[in-house]
Length: 128
Image (tube, rainbow, N blue to C red; front, side, top):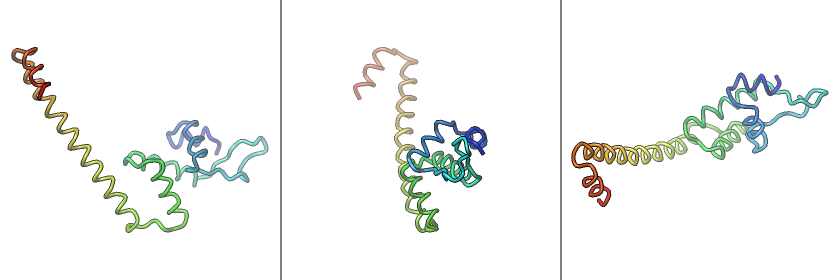
């Protein structure tokens, strides 16, 4: 399939697909290029893009995804390898949730202050 079809099937832009090739996340076999030198992709490329897309939705960086793909390529990806990476993401996510909850709580308090003498109470709340 050509890049347009790959883009449509994966839901990723052509530029994104080209970027993934450039940074080494996706490879295009030169033997698959047509006589017009257009890149042709197989279903494995689509599978890789879908894996990248899903991994990004879980919060993994492109470098981490590159590591996954390398482990898949060498048939070394297993639960023992993935578990510490997942635990690290979960810890980071829990820290973000805690920070966001703190912001949420502070905003709720600020909103409550706005129901009274807004200016004086807001200035007082900001200094805390």
